[in-house]
Image 1 (cartoon, rainbow, N blue to C red):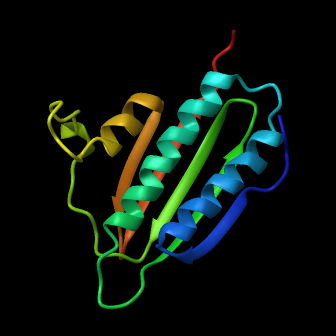
Image 2: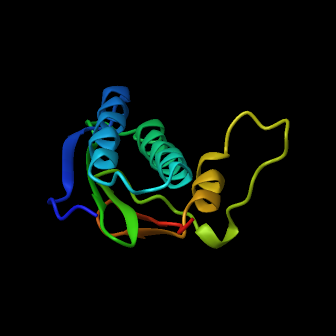
Length: 137
């Protein structure tokens, strides 16, 4: 797998940032040609859900700054999102898929299902750590 430095994006939490994250994922996947299609698809899905949640919940009097670092090594894909928003008060141990009629609330449940590791920390904002191990086929 690649030994290139992590891909880092900085910006304001808005829909254009999510588009930039998707473009950066394409670059990341080009660094890992041996990674499986399922790993790529599920990692992209999880990263997209977290990026979208950051943007959707970035309600503040001033713009919310967000950074993401995307990386790949021989073991896994990883992403670290940090933002300047008020800390999200949630416990990932209690996240579950809402019922079929719900119009929202699936993002973190989907990310948890797609990843091997998902953590959330608060310290003057939010830090989300995502990791998807490569499956050997």
